[in-house]
Length: 500
Ligand code: AMP
Ligand code: ZN
Image 1 (cartoon, rainbow, N blue to C red):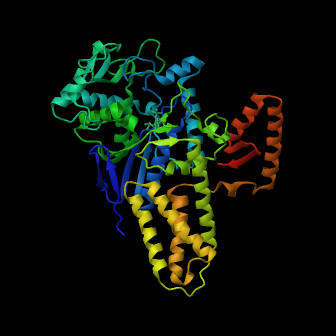
Image 2: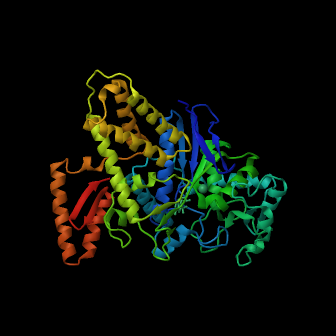
Image 3: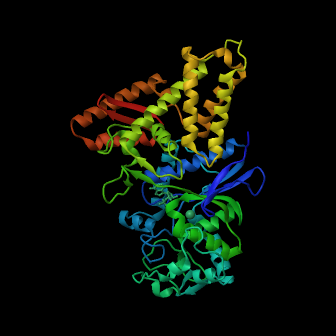
């Protein structure tokens, strides 16, 4: 079986054989969340996708350094350098708390959601505010190389010079500089400071009211959002590294500008493979708060939303995410979730049956053996082909049919050897738990009598609160339980719970 992995490289718009810079090692950078509000389900889709990529690369024997940042400064409301307020500063001002309190609260929430979805923590999780010195140094390098200019204390990247030197501005997003030239953004506040509309700020002079600010050679200010990822990926993975990922909404301007900055600072290409996940939709439309077409993870876990008929467990949702390829849009509908929940249960049941099968000991390699071996090889090949989780799942279900046939006596045991049965058992365990990162949530239920008794009591108290329309108490109980990773599920039959 060939062990090469094909990756769709967004930069080249084609699949390529993955060849790491250093044999056996992978450096992967993924743009993390901006921690100014609760993590939304779209973010979760992207991070679950990269979690599976991370897990599969490790399964394939690579030593992976996975860097996923926390954006805690520089991401402005509206456009990147319109002079709009920093998203975190704005939230801090509105709530009358320190910006770092906002950052801490939503970072905690993000981590807890990642653990509910059973994603592995990255190897390094750097914060932008912890890397101001590196960012100032990078701005200086870009200035020294002639790819940036200072205007009134802010520093702008000179996209026109970069494009004229034929460095390929627009290559990732497919935008050509002529289009960028034609773009008029007269309404931008700082527009007059730029030499060209597509230039972007890499250091921004702080307005007197701006809460987060640092000294720099150019002004008291703060770094541009794009710059932080360039500085942190360089610091932890080197000037050139293997994989850079994020949602495809970040291709332009964020990733395009990252590439320009890295070129501008060191004359080198940052990542060799760019991977982009597609967006999460709901009922065929973009998930958007403004028109009500949105649902939070908590609403999914509790069933408390007009968009769904019941509560779904975190693992049923993870399974649902696996059913689409990371480069396809993922359309969240109640029917799709119901189907995913059923599919997940079927897969777990097949695995339970499989693990209980014992070989009678007199089997020899027959047609069935060959079929099973081939299907196992194909399951891995689907993952080798740009991490195709839906196809790998389809192969596992084909194998599940064979498992059920063996269990029910429709298929002959004497046509497979004991070692193939063992290989089949190992494949199911590896895929379900190690590669797909799923968990059997029923296993955690009620296995501790005291916990089980306490949960019955808590659910009873919450039921009483709800009966008296005391929603505050009911929500408080649910939120407190979520914080300790216990999910409540409300349905017509009553309330059940599970550990995440
Ligand atoms: P943000 O916190 O907005 O900076 O986004 C964090 C990550 O989530 C980025 O990689 C985004 O591209 C990704 N992302 C944002 N919205 C969605 C969505 N609706 N579907 C999938 N990924 C998303
Ligand atoms: Zn980034």
